Length: 173
Image (cartoon, rainbow, N blue to C red):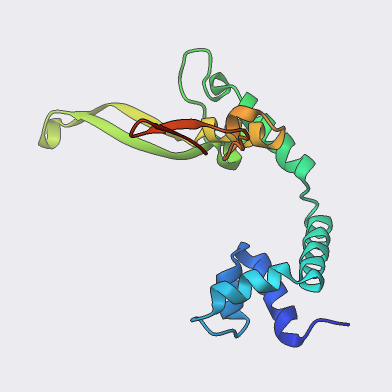
């Protein structure tokens, strides 16, 4: 059995931001019940299969796979800040930076010109360039999650029992 038009619209909207509640609203479900509807729709085997197929098709179309993401994160984590400077420790022009730095590792550049004197005697004495770097620690964390480094897990499941003494009585949890 095929998806209903509303279910198909949910699949399309879910791919926008992977937010089931918002996808349900945009697909035409009531905002009052959208959270429950989104959860229910993702639990529907046919809808879940359609989401998986659509994600796979998007990955094929964009050529962005988990391998691409991991390789990109690794390249960014390994990028050397020294590549942005010349032998005299002057910041190179942006067009001379390695491509990996130009594609998001530098979040911004603040440029401030320094002057001395006033009026006609005012003279530029230098320029200060401050690089704002993107969060490289976050990249390492994402790589760690991808390769299942236990230190980066969001939740740790524990099993077993704990004995707690409540007012002189032992209780097992």
